[in-house]
Length: 303
Image 1 (cartoon, rainbow, N blue to C red):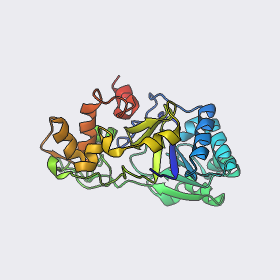
Image 2 (image 1 turned 135 degrees about the vertical axis):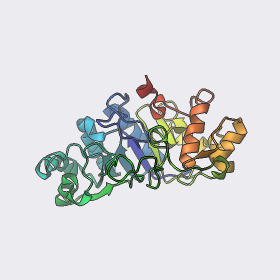
Image 3 (image 1 turned 120 degrees about the vertical axis):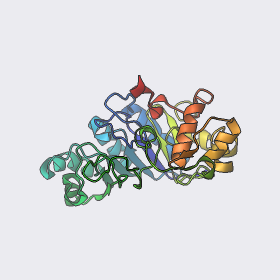
């Protein structure tokens, strides 16, 4: 196994509760990296030798700004490229956004991506006018927006016809989206989902690492825990075909998970993520180490 980028979920906590969120981010979530833990991660990445980039995501990264700033500075000192994903709540004006971003730019931040669409709280829909993006441009940072096209009729009473089926959009129906956005959407037969269309589960270019040490091949689908075994050992010993969830996914997609474990299912699902996530929810008690943590499956919110 070989990958070159680690996307650090700095925290599961977020000031928003977006309907489409893969990680169930919310103000009620728990789990955040400490500076000491991140230093250990950096050193393990150096020892592995193939990692050249760290991206910091969430939840919302800017909620723990001092840790974020120090992490970007330290990663840069060690020779890693760096990036940040944020919902941009802090960018109320260009002037204020510059105050937030300038220290990060001086610490060596390479790029920043800001979510700008109707799913993200009060975030602006017109990405060209987002003050965070404008501030990033002024500081010479590589910048980009993450803007999801919503399904037709989503929270739009002016265009939605009563009884009209919601359709379209480019949301992936896993995490909170599987439970909050799937109702009313057109579906395809469950047994038509025979591949994983989004993730390379054998040799990914990047992997997600959460503040509990879990290494995610896909959100909530874990290959090992970096706080329990060294990163180099986890990657060397990774056998995707032997993984109780990844193995069936490689053999026949989410539909194979249903068949192999003889799970109850609906006639149809919105997309492959929808079937996979719903199926994994049923398997969590059987594979608690591989389908973790609770945060990724909305347990904190349900409680």
